[in-house]
Amino acid sequence: MSASTPQMSPEEAVRRVAQAREALVGEVHKIIIGQDEMIEQMLICMFARGHCLTIGVPGLAKTLTVSTIAQALAMKFSRIQFTPDLMPSDITGTEIIDQDAATGQRSFRFVHGPIFANIVLADEINRTPPKTQAALLQAMQEYEVTAAGKTYTLEQPFFVMATQNPIEQEGTYPLPEAQLDRFMLSINVGYPTRAEERDIVVATTQAARHDVKPVLRGQDILWIQQLVRQVPTSQHMIDYAVDLARATRPKEPPSPDFIKNWLAWGAGPRAAQYMVLGAKARTIIDGRFAVTADDIRRMAPPVLRHRIFTNFNADAEGIDVEQVIEKVLAAVPEPSYGEKLTGQPRPAQQPAVQTQPATAPAGQAQPSAAVQPMQGQPAAPPRSSPTPPPAGPTPPPVR
Image 1 (spheres, rainbow, N blue to C red):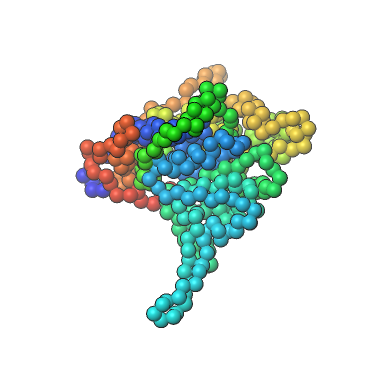
Image 2: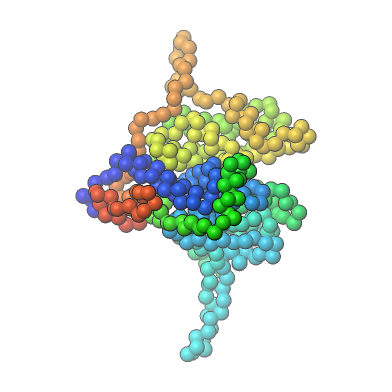
């Protein structure tokens, strides 16, 4: 991008992200009826450069939602159906022997597995042994795959969207805690309302068919991911996320008594990181410029529910993880602004909103025309400049 290209204003950048989100959700709803919260959390996960685990009983459109989102994004998509006999090489790829027809010379050639895609659907991930589940770990954390002594870098953007059935436990393999922690969000999918279920039955028992059109490209997702990390977040909000994560640790002094009584293990540092990143993504897809306490609270359940583990006391009392998270949100107060003044009462809480938006630094990728859709049709390029080249190095993964 030339030095003379004018920079996009923060207001315009946030407006384009909100437009892109509306267009993407509109395409998904051509196929998916309801499930607004699940779709929103999946988009938050993508825009924050994370991976998600979707848990729900059969028939709630978990797999269909992921595949529909993939259709609305002009990126490479692959689906892996996890089974008990699946091997790690079935995911990462394997070496085969090639023979030159002219010389008869043989050589090894690495054939890429289905993980070499932008969106990977790991369907029923708990139906395969831990050895095969672990084949995803390096890809999810380091965005690379090592096979036969060589390391291959995955093309960005890269997301793993896994599904899991919570009621069928016979013949399944629960995910190890180390792998669970790699997922940014654990999304619980509930039953549709009566009106939604009626619409589902009507839509799926007739011949009408809706085509999903791509509205975003990989370059657009990379630009949004960069923009998410530039959303202003006050120290006040970061402290709130850290306090919520630390309150879940039964052996830490700040934790409430019910945590010490009900939990065996609490959330690690990734919880606070992902709460802040998810809150930032939620902020800009709503068309806002700074993170609020409500954003942190809304992101706490999907971030924490797979990172805290109840003990025997909680099981005996019928206490589940959702109830623990609800009590944590009620017990941990939102930090106050500023410092306590000597001889004066503590100032009242103020809205955690900053009015100064962030501007994309020079040299970073700008969104393509696909980020400015209009009524489902491809939008014209921005007037200020043609579509710029792809983004430079993406920010490092959360560790």
